[in-house]
Length: 351
Image (cartoon, rainbow, N blue to C red; front, side, top):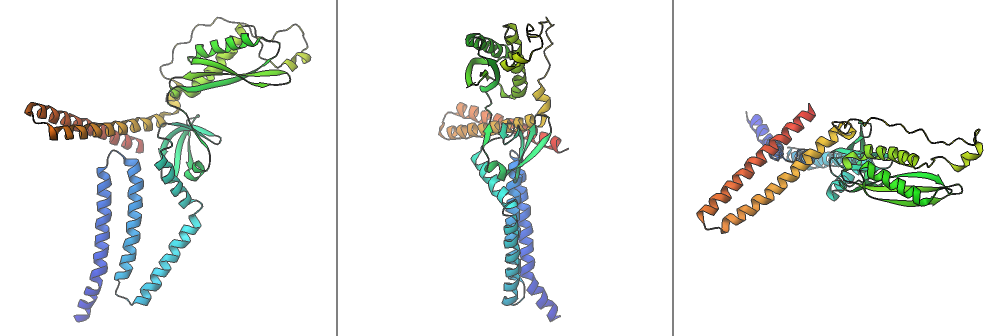
């Protein structure tokens, strides 16, 4: 009976360590479940805390085992070697991406829904994970880009409003620069751009390169507007009897009198589409952006609530206090609805 009691007493401390570790892991999970407004960011932090809790608990568990110190030292040394080897093997990939992810997220370089361009890739952000960022490309497919690649390459973030759309065209020296610039500006205005301006970017041996720019109010229509600008540039140059063809082509014509401008046809105006192509292409990115906006609204509501709470402390008039309390209650109700909406949208995305 005594050996059993001694064994029970010797295992009491290691068992307690395991129970405390499980309780801490459950507490960690419960706390982050309560942080409903930031589920994606919370998952990354929750997993990181859980990892360090398990690692710390494992060390304490080994130290509490009823074995001699030399054996404990050997086990801890072996554990240290395993951890060191893991870090060394993954330092260029796993650990590097993790550190780069923390750096990118702390700098807040971009958010869900933003249109970014990095390297040869361009698309809207749908998800920021611990090791990579997911973007939705122009063809509506998804691509994951490692954080290490993002941290070591220039990243272009397109502005939400008043972003510049541009396109270039090469024309001959025999055409008046004034005529060309007027036609290009008219094309930009017809596209829906504002404050158009023209740069002459190159004076070549046979042609001049003109670049027309204009401001787009909503960058959500970046790709369709860029395509429309190219179409309008062709239309307005042709309407102005300006050929869009290399001057060197003139020497190779089989018919010298032929002018390479298509005939103008009066077409019926196309019906306005119910939705822009971007709404169909970037469906997931738009959903992510909507969630980010709701999170921003929650922060604004928290700030207003704090201000009202401070005001409530110094207010002495009973009627004014009741009004402030009523306003705080309405803010809480609105926050609850927003959080519920975010949870429902996240659940729908997972399904």
